[in-house]
Each structure stands twice: as C-alpha cells, then as structure tokens.
Amino acid sequence: MTNINTANRAALGYSTIPDNQIIETEHTSGAHHYGRLDLVVRQTEGCWLYTQDGKKYLDCLAAYSAANQGHHHPKIVQAIKDALDGQYGSVISNVVYTDVLSEFLKKASDLAPQIGERFGANGNKTLPKNGGVESVETAVKLGRCYGYKAKGIEDGKQEIIVCGNNFHGRTVTAVSFSSTAKYKEGFGPLTPGFVTVDYGDIDAIEKAINDNTCAIMVEPMQGEGGMYIPREGFLRGLRKLCDKHDLLLIFDEIQVGLGRTGKMFCFQHRGVIPDALILGKAISGGLVPLSVLITNTKIMDMVFQPGRDGSTFGGYPLACVAGIAALDVLIKEDLPGRAAKYGEILKKKIEDIASRSSHVKEVRGRGLFIGIEVKNGDAMVYCRKLLELGVLANDSHGHTIRISPPLIITEKEIDYLVERLEKVLVD
Image (cartoon, rainbow, N blue to C red; front, side, top):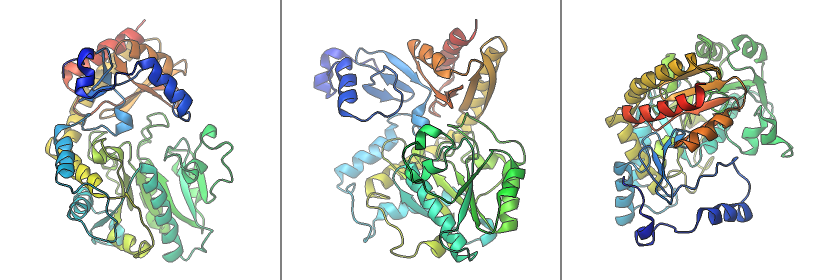
C-alpha cells in the first residue's frame, strides 16, 4: 500500500476530520473503554496501520489476535463483497436454513479434531455466536446443563472451576470469575457458581473438585493474564481429572487458537483434546463479529434442543461468508506453519535483545504470541516508546509487552520490529 495522499482523501471516501477532533468527539460522545494511545488510524492493510498524514505503524497487536490473516485480506474482503453484491449477506432469521450457514458449520466442525473423544466418535457440532464472550457464556450453559442432566447435580448448585488471571470477556458472568478487581467492582450481584484456583496448579484444582463440579474452563495459554504457558503436564492433568470425575474440559482459544501459537489450536502443543472448544476473533478474519462453541455431537444434542438457545446475528449470512473465507485462508496459506516459522525467528531475536538489556525480566511465548516481561512492571512505558518509533504494541497484565502481529508478517517486517525493540530495550 502506498502512503495515504491527504489531498485526495475526500475523493477516496476517507474521513478528513482532524485527529484532535476525532479524539475529542470520542471522549465527549462515547463511554470510556480501553486506556487509549494517542493514535488515530485511518486505513489498514496487511500488517500495517496508516494515519491521516501517511505515517505507518507495524501492528504488533492484531486486535488481540482478531487479525491473524492480516488487515483486509483480499480473499476475505472479496467474499464479503460478493455476498453483498449478490444480495445474500443480510441477516435472516434462523428459523430458516441458508447454504452459507451450513457450509460454515461443516467447515468449523471439521477443522477441529474429534472434540470430547470419551463421548464417542460422533463428530463435532458448532454453535455460532457474535463476540467471543457470547460463546464463553454458551460454554458455561453447556457445562452447567451437562452437570444437571448427565451428573444429576441439583440445578443451581453447579460449579465450574476456572483459573486466576484469566480473561474470558466482560459480561457480568465473565467478570464474576475474573481476578481483575476493576472489571467487576460495583457490578454486583455477581454470578455465582465459579471456583478460582491458580493457573497451572493441578493439585489445587483437584482439591477444588466436589460433587457439584461440572466443568473446568481454562485458556491453554494465557494472553491477557501475562502471556503465560502452563507448566508441563498441567493440561494433561486436567484431562485426567475430567475423565476421572466426569467433568467437561472447556478450552477458551479465542486469542490463542487458529494458528496464533504455531499450530491450528494451542491445545495441540500438549496433545490434549478438550470436551468443548471456544473460538472467535480470527475466525472471521477480523472483519465481522463471529465466534463459535464446538463440542461433541452427543453433548451438543443433550444440552441444546430446539428452542433452548438462539441468536439473531449469530451465524448470519455475512458472518458465515467471512468465516468460510477466513478459515480457507488459514488452511491454504498455512498460517499456523508461518506462525511457527517466523515466531521462532522473532523469539530468538528478542531473546538476544533480552540478553543485552537491563530492562527485560523474561521472554516467553509460542509462535507469534510472545511476551516480554519487564523488570519495572510497567510495560506501557515501553509500548509508548515503540509507538513513537512506528510500532503498535500493548501490555499484558501491566508487566509484559505483548507482541502478537498478524500471522502474515514477513522477515523484513520482523527486522523492522526487532530494530525498534532494540532501541527501546537495550541501554
């Protein structure tokens, strides 16, 4: 992409409102959201973000893994254009069938290995939603209803075990079991039925299991919690506990799935298959809100009979068109393989920087999901310096610089990033 020509922005259909006016309007007309960086993005392509004056920034956040395929991937954009031009993109009630929904459901169900192996080789079923937290909430319903129907737990007494420093979204239910106080302060009464234990502590989880436990829900690798990989044996230990006590093992891979860590699914690094899988963000290529819950056909049919669940926009035609194209890109362009290859290159270069830096405490990660923990505990100090040098990054849990660019990043773009990381982190 050539830099934006400010003179012909109006002709191209881009906004010409000054940056300071945009920022002021958001402050006066919108609710406070994330802590913001003073950057107004006008256009995106691939791994790059562009401002009104034509400056470009390497995107090393990728909208928290929503843009794994890169911004405005041409194949996904074309699929959406075709749907709109062909008049099959509008929302239609799910009381009728559509060809694109059936195609998307099959593609998503077949993408994953047999989920919930212990329930038999029945195939997978997929339930589509919009934002990722909707699928998290649906997974909570799945786990609770399984406990009620399959285990005979009294309705209202079901408990789900979760891990500390988790991030599963921001609805009342999701923040009810968050470890971050500001996410839930003042929003009570909070949703009961969750037990929190330390991430990676299999002994604590075993002690937390009781007769009312119906499921364990975890991230196979934590993103917002600090870019942590659980210790060896943790996921396998969860699988054994769930098999022993007849619990559903639910993996939330909204941020770490779909190629991000160097495999299609993060759980494949440990060879542990869940009973239910939550995906989102990159499943639509970052262009349309879409998320899914995938589980064994036996479990899905046990819990969700006709009329038990529904969503107006969940699985609507335009989202399905984007989802089909996004999954095709992931597979045909082998983005998990690219993440593994270029993630290894990038991590080695960052580790070299860390060895010469007095600011870095630890480097950790898999694929193109890398965290740089800093000693002073304030990663945003370094993220702001990176922004001044043309790199967009953000913090994870305050103390860690999160590096998670689109999976289409090139070696030349990695060198661009590394050069700027060195300027910021090496004395």
